[in-house]
Length: 135
Image (cartoon, rainbow, N blue to C red; front, side, top):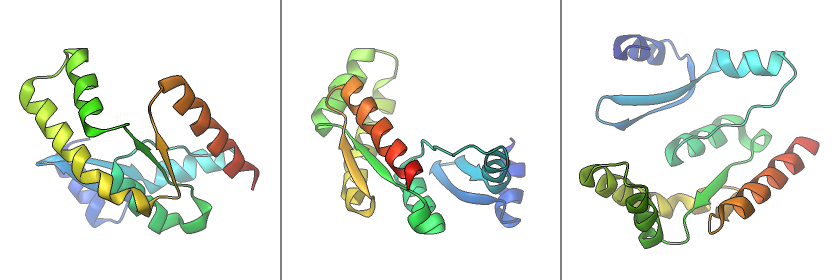
């Protein structure tokens, strides 16, 4: 949606959570989408940044499980980003700096999951989600 439409929806309180992640770049979760998914009898799993995760936890409380996905280290994250060779240097620096800052929020989440091995992290995340659904 356009920036103008996004800002109008903010004023209309249409989001469960939203954030201006980078200047002029907004991300958010519409309440209507969450309600649509629930109405179909399904559960909602969201992949959001740290502030979005904290805001979702505040909004839904114990009805939500917030999982903080953490790299083994900031250095490893930087190595992974560089090995992909898909981003310019400025983007890598920005992402690494943001990640380093976000680590201080890990204690605001229900669970911290270290992504040391992608398959293991995926399986553990899947187990956590299934356990929450069964509650």
